[in-house]
Length: 288
Image 1 (cartoon, helix red, strand yellow):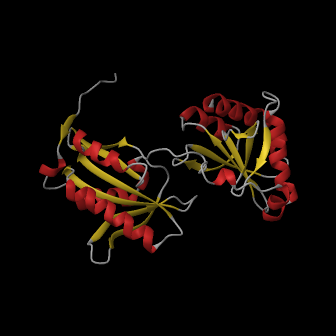
Image 2 (tube, helix red, strand yellow):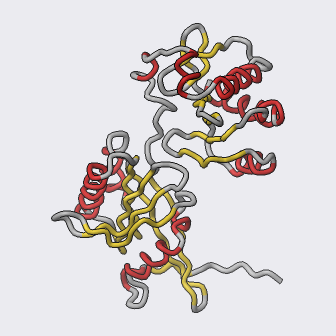
């Protein structure tokens, strides 16, 4: 018979065996444990010019996103926040080709410091993760909980990019005639539940507009051999299962823009019309 037990919460700062280095090794071995997705390890104790060492550098293999991670046992403090932001700033300046995000992990992230960190959010991409340790018999379990997520941005920089209007020929050259037609097919799917939209061609994406105003609950980015469809929906197990069960080519969830990214090849919109209609309808309802 299954028994319910209440594990004993412990503070690792007081534990002589489980040190910061041990936790660092656990995360390095499986970065997914911190709850930021299927990340890969790029570096440990990464030397910073005149600024010490960065605990962990992680990267999303499906995008150019890097996470500068600083770990601290016990309570977070001012120096921890400053160090985390400093390392993030150094890395983004050294490697501007990547998108960078600062990550603070500590056992105790107080409301005061959440407020301080929150002041930066939206200007400095920063995530705060609280690590809790529980003793179960002779074992210790770790639970990582995001207590402050990065402030979600719009699907595009709508104040700027929306003005950079292009046309169909721009995207035909950048992608191909076949992949631009995928955008047409997606718009045809949208017209089955709403006839008020039209395609608008912008420098960075193709998206729906209503009476000239953008409604980017989805955007399409034609490439040479496929099109990337971004569907703006909160990440959930339900949507994950829909994508997996219908064998859509998942390019990974973009947490920064709150969007599922799906790779579509020629013929797939018609082949998987029902599931794509379902996801687009959910996104349109959520967006409005």
